Length: 131
Image 1 (spheres, rainbow, N blue to C red):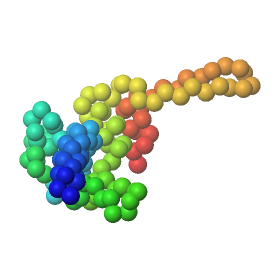
Image 2: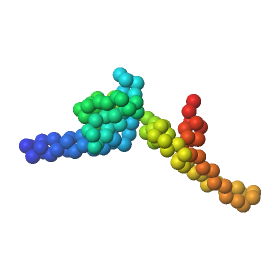
Image 3: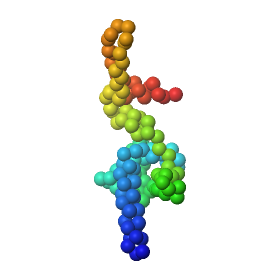
Image 4: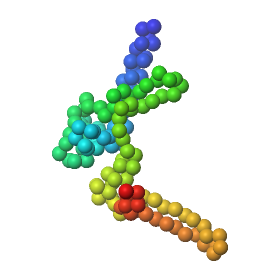
């Protein structure tokens, strides 16, 4: 039994490390500051999209990292607010990468037998999805 407990503890430590990796890849919303935060592994702090705001390494945007109570289904990052569009589009435009291609679509016109390529850069795509 002691070995199983140690393994479960080790797994939680590994899960916490993995969670911080996601913390660095995804922006998380903090209602207290109305800001988006991302974990910076090099500095060990959570940095906001508003450059002057930081949170300590111990801060977590989620209330529970993982919930396995409904096994085999797993729920991650309970209580957290994230927005994949912000994490993959808005932040890049804010960082000066708005001209990079974000969307490319190849379509075939049956009546003319030609292919059309439509490309949108991040700025154009952001404008298309904002409401």
